[in-house]
Image (cartoon, one colour):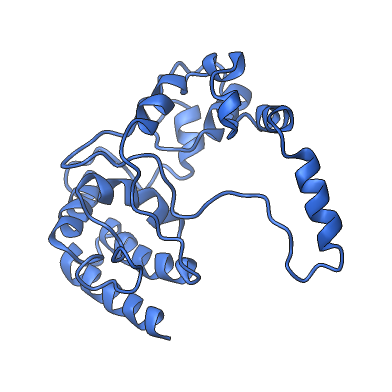
Length: 223
């Protein structure tokens, strides 16, 4: 699932999408010509062009130890670097465009939740409403080293001082990418990710692996 999450911005940059707009079909989308082109480029980074390596291990450690020059990570990575590799000089850029701009999005949303079977749901929701304000948003995201989510905080001194301030503005100016918030999104992403992993490890070509993944995803959607 995590592999799919990291690959999808490449897919979106090629104008591909993992599922149909109604989220009811994978064939024709997960294995479209645009998706094949995106996965071919992705796999070539490792297997043909040799500008990425599977031998480096943990990507955060590789970048923090100056063994990797580029990393694609979420906003928390700035806090990780500040704590674990403060001597690394870096700049944050918006994701590049190809045939389209990938836009700011994610495979799955991050959120605070209340367990639906909790015997204390009402109290939990009251607590959530109590702490859900710009002040709390700023405090707990600043402690985590990540971007706050309240609009009121996006032009705060903390956010403006971050190295990802301009890149975040650039990403938010792009079109919203496809989203895949489906009840079976984890299963679908795992099935799709098998094709991506297969290409990266040289176990097959993009088209047949994506065909296989699309068929499996359609079975998941029908079950």
